[in-house]
Image 1 (cartoon, rainbow, N blue to C red):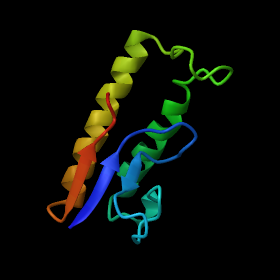
Image 2 (cartoon, rainbow, N blue to C red):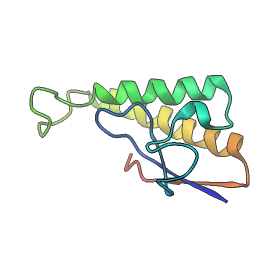
Image 3 (tube, rainbow, N blue to C red):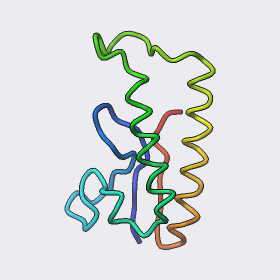
Image 4 (cartoon, one colour):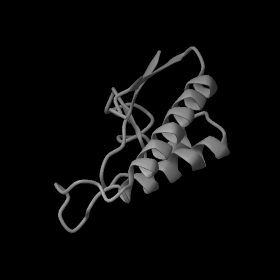
Length: 101
């Protein structure tokens, strides 16, 4: 059984983190190593890049520059990508949502 954690992190281009840091998927997880479709790989990378714009890089502790609508859209897209990831990886994988979204 493979275990992944799903959350977005400042400055990181993937939302996936293996529980086994020495595993074959890299840490953080290298999306191209996962048995998922190119479309889902692209979407996970896009969401990670999009997340970076939620941070005020001039002073990161400041509130997000995103509007409520932008945040809600991002949450919907992230949850859809997580569900697609779980479907594509199948029963040999556990993906725990730690995104706090």
